[in-house]
Amino acid sequence: MRLTTLCYIEKDGCWLMLHRIKKAQDENQGKWIGIGGHLEENESPEECVLREAKEETGLSLTGLRLRGIITFILPDWGNELTFLYTAETKESDLPECPEGVLQWVPIDRVDSLPLWEGDRVFLPLLRTREDCFSLKLIYRPGGELDRWILDEGMNH
Image 1 (tube, helix red, strand yellow):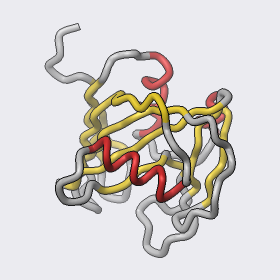
Image 2: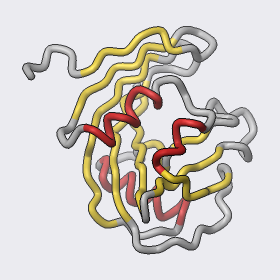
Image 3: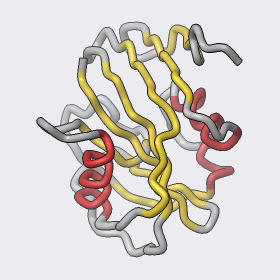
């Protein structure tokens, strides 16, 4: 199982989104996603998300907060465990990114972008929940979301 991070950076009511349109053979091709990547050997999720944010955006983050753990069941690409974060920044200048186009998008307009179906499950949780959640997203071959399970086995 791959270990990854994903971070939604906020500034002035916007999230920094990455439109994945530059890499060849990208499973995220054409989608808008947050910032993140794969954990390197001996790296914690926090170290990974800070490194990836610096590499992809050049931004320094404040208020980094673990918001959720997502288990992706992906028959086409292999399963993935993702540590989901939010953070803030005071900076706004964005560099060229080799993976796509970076853009500040008003949070209330993110839903109108081409997103993964599973993102439409967890992004509202970032706006409505303060606790750290556990989400399992089960995809069918071809990338269609089959079903999802939120906080399985947790007492509420």
